[in-house]
Length: 267
Image (tube, rainbow, N blue to C red; front, side):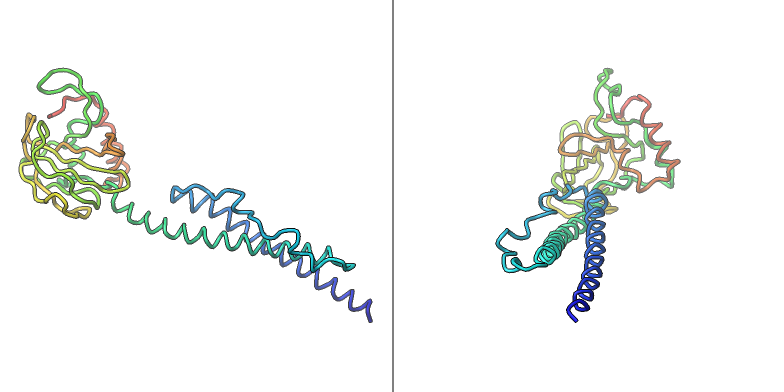
């Protein structure tokens, strides 16, 4: 009878061991996806290996299981179960963090500049007359760093904010003329210069696609146009890199080509 009981216990222990192995594989797969897919997409650092493995019990924790012929078998199984429980808790905490990051990502996607600041019956790519980088200045006749792009459009053409944010500047700004600056959060800001009219106020919240002003010829400008800038951590970035939401691949590559030509700026 004891032999049959022992044989039955061994059989069930093997089944339990197989189930533990399956749990460990599933958990390892979740951890792999968390670190190398979810966190990569959300631009977050993977959890340290020490946190993943974690401490799940000291030597004394298993003292009550010792002093039996089969003690080591029971202790090993209990340790594996405790390890799984510890890793599951860590993974649960990690998924809570990933969930919060995903919510922030959604907010970030509608806040980061992602559309064209003007619309002109699908001819906007042809309206880009000067790109980002070193360009001849129209008045000083020297090469200067052009920190944005210029769109040549008639005065009065509506200007649209390119991402959700808060207006941090709305008024006259020296050579920029009538200027609007929007803080989009996530270290991004956009600037709209040489406006004929400003239709927002400092401190006002704006949403992507909302009209904020009209094109003009104010400040140091040689013709009606919109000077548009994108800044990340207060450093100018090429705005063309952010127009992908609004353009087909063909239009985007055409705009890249046009913006790379060292034409004279309008400001």
